[in-house]
Length: 387
Image 1 (cartoon, rainbow, N blue to C red):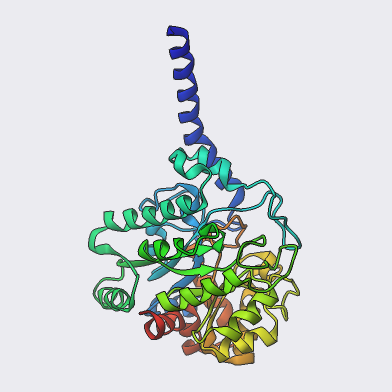
Image 2: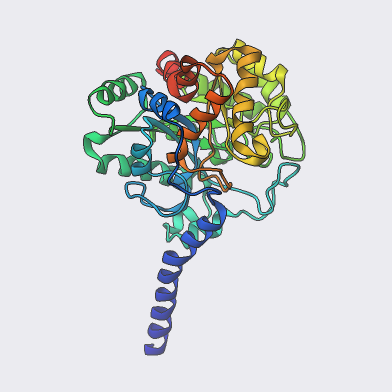
């Protein structure tokens, strides 16, 4: 018995050591910053940035990695202190519950080994999360709520229009007040059970991407095998999302799902992080026809920051993608959708957002257009459409 106790003690110590070492190492490999801070821009660009009233980003996966977001990190792309340093008012924190091994833009099987399972175990999460997608999702939602509660009046979890109005008013008095919203990347998190949707709503989730890198119970992924449209279950979920007030995110969806959703929903949709095919011809990106239909619905399109969405070099191509949407349907429908901390290499972390302002200036964007892209469009979209 004594030997068993010693062995179990050693195993426990090794597991504890793994939880301290493995997740930071994995994140440092998965979320590099190509040009680390600090960043400098022209006096004119910095002046415009400093005048921005509201900066917002529609996609960030920072909750996945187990970092304390209330502390400034030395890895990854986003945390609360860096949001404040960058004067970012609102971040959409998206929850990743499953990701296939060997994930790629072309084709992924539904039964591929899940990368998130070993990460979940290595982070020291409850065994109830190890093999349950819905439990993982709810756990990450609670993490954000806990982080925000620890901030007192200096952070607000935005669940409705009243919360957003409170955030806007608070930031007029103190720019260090920040806001967070909750999204889910991939409705496989529902585990095929419609009853899990109200649970996510109660947890604060206000945006759900219907698919991620693989097909699921709702239909086909842009990177899956079937390229199918919405299943009957998918249609049921979209209808229920509309009723509850959860935005449909079409990022990663097959073209058939994009068409099906735009045909059936009466609500504006989101594409939280994407590129455009006119700049980078990828099955991950939006066609001009899709952009027009999304705009006609009053939707909003977040442009991602990484090379597989916009191409290389990233910074001018991010702006080229924004410009393409502007020229096609108008400035009101485009926003930032970085995909920070989403297992991607990015050209700069969140404190480098002034670089985008300078690049837009170089591309002859007006200050009003820059304000719209950097956050005013997101603010208006949510004020109009949040319940």
